Length: 263
Image 1 (cartoon, rainbow, N blue to C red):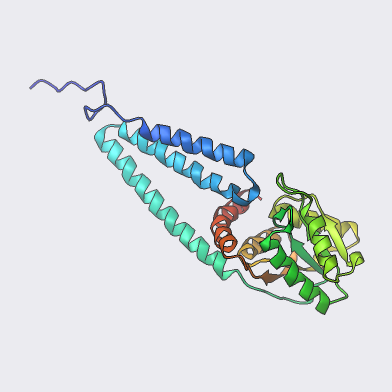
Image 2: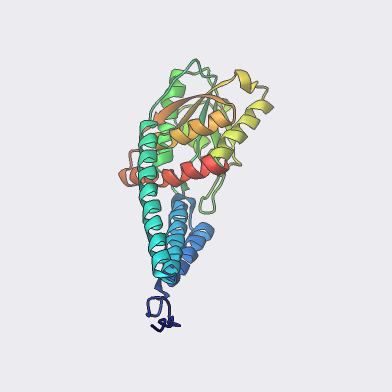
């Protein structure tokens, strides 16, 4: 019996589609543009888009393989996607479980972590943090506070300056407010705050910090603080803006993964 000649158009006899590769290119380009030009508040979208680009590219390659190999690649791809969904569901549960106030010992310094500042002043999430911090500071007038946050590309001023002004307007004495205005992410918030306090004579091995942020943020804060050898308690601020709260819980997923791997 004459062996069937392999088609030049692929093992299936049909010309392999280029649609998955075009979609992968579009998604990768979108991820790059978001990372370069979009404000930090929604830049987290870039990572899922890049992951989808890889999935599309692998799927396209599977269509160009021999039928058996291509089917095996697609089965593995589906398994990886299913495992990823389970992983992120579990991680979201961990983030939600960590969205709590956790007080241990007697804090010596309060630290408020920055968030978006608009032309009109601190955005909703940052106002929530500041209101929570201001209430605590009024109850503990002996404590200083570090406001930590630099200036993003779309922000009119540094987050630290906006936070200082907000707290001062709520009756917190200016001499109690110390600004750390160089950081651009949570890792830098903690490391730069540590450097600022060391510059003021604090021995960080013996200094207990109370870190104030919205609940969704605190799992990552605790993880990084432990990694950097910081002794902290956490004070969970509410997230009164519902759309911002939902968005923050979603974008915190890749942020935790990124911080775990790279910070």
